[in-house]
Amino acid sequence: MTKYIFVTGGVVSGLGKGITSASLGNLLKSRGLSVVNQKLDPYINVDPDTMNPFQHGEVFVTEDGATTDLDLGHYERFTGVNLRKDANVTTGSIYRKVIERERKGDYLGATVQVIPHITDEIKRRIKGISNDVDIQITEIGGTVGDIEILPFLEAARQIRKEFGQENVMFVHVTLVPFIGPSSELKTKPTQHSVSMLRSYGISPDLIVLRSEQELNDEIKTKVSLFCDVEYENVINAPDLDDIYDVPVKMFEEGLDAAVDKRLSLNSESPELEEWKKMLSLKNGVEQSINIAILGKYFGLPDSYMSVVEALKHSCLQNKVTLNVVWIDADNFDLNDLKNLNGVVVPGGFGYRGIEGKIMAIEYLRKNKIPFLGICLGLQCAVIEFARNVCGISDANSSEFSQTTKNPVIDLLPNQDLEMNDVGASMRLGTYPCKIKIDTTAKSIYENEIIYERHRHRYEVNNKFRNQLESNGLVFSGLSPDEDLVEMIEIKDHPYFVASQFHPEFKSRPWDPAPMFNSFIAASKKINYFDENIKDEHKVKD
Image 1 (cartoon, rainbow, N blue to C red):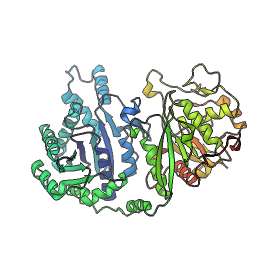
Image 2 (image 1 turned 45 degrees about the vertical axis):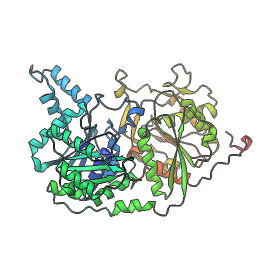
Image 3 (image 1 turned 90 degrees about the vertical axis):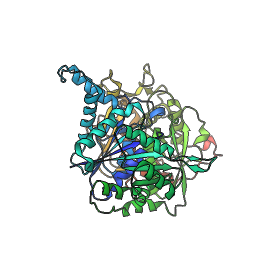
Image 4 (image 1 turned 30 degrees about the vertical axis):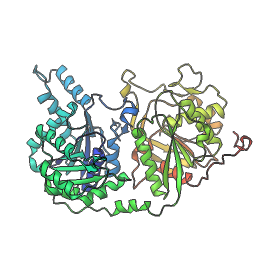
């Protein structure tokens, strides 16, 4: 039967429960075990689809079209397992299901309560994802003490009661802060966190100690004694420069060995040679490149998490060091685009920053600076081309201007969108794309049909396709029925490629997304733009 590992957090949020869960999944999978990861989120939103990126970070999209927490991206990138919509469970989705059942009379007039009805639904969601895998790792979001996570903790406690101590364990991730004035590492926050967890009927089997630095044996011994866990089950997890180093560090600390022993898995030692070989690509790198992300969600670094990780993966494979330059599309100068090897214009919604993106794309197109557009980046590139090459001066998207006479980006007539439910009004999940021969796209993907993940509402308006194409815009990727534009590019440019889909979601550190990989390969060949170049020397339309 499936064995369950619950990962909880204490003291403060943002400690890295997601990376810990992903790294544990990586190590157990390397032991030859089948693994699946899951995230329980305590917020009342049904999903993060409409949540502000400044507050929540990016929305990760699964193969089957679920909009989920960004931690699912970490799970996929560390384990290589493509997750489904049942891998992310929110309080909102739980309560919605229970209320729907109550309205239908499924509870036969019973008084519906948190216990047992909410906790039973949580347990159903937890147990429903396993599909006979060896190990399920379920991360419970938030921190112990948050009122929102109490039903999830109770459900997890009941699952241990149901399946037995030998089949369920708890991993607690907590902070050991360094107090500068006293030059001491403090274990009291961990002790209090564990004590609170015990008050809910849960005793952690293993504790992961997050800290700014390596912890000595004295600290680990102290935590072992006062938190009543075996010494070998106290894991040191200091800050590292690269998140992909974490599985190796956790292996050295004995994380997977402790789990194997606690759950009596009797698995083989992990095969980490390929992972270490991948990490070794960082050695001896001499070239550094400046890649800008020109977006508008910079209040939280996680807003473009998958884009940044996809760039890292490609830089690793191309043997270059990545310097990310953040450019606010709503507030920048064209001089900010100089001394760059390439620019990514990522996805997003809303009018803010659009004109800045269009202005930047024109500059990149004319000055032969590599450009990678994703989703909204493609749409802005089409608008720019329509305005400045085709002469359609008022070209726009109907998302940004409902009165535009030339909506080169629009909702297509055959789109059946549930506009009363914003979270359900998008084209989501994996769709096929047919690649046109003799294009950059064909050299990128090689295959005729590819499959990529989508998250968007608006499309290139087919009424303008002939005009755009006759002026030099190449539609290098289309839906198999040729009704939807999936990729565009222009010729005679070092790299000017954009996609309606999101290739970053499928990028892996050992297997970079092809569009990102080719973009970095082109970018590393570019010398910095000459700041003194005169306008008359720039490439003309």
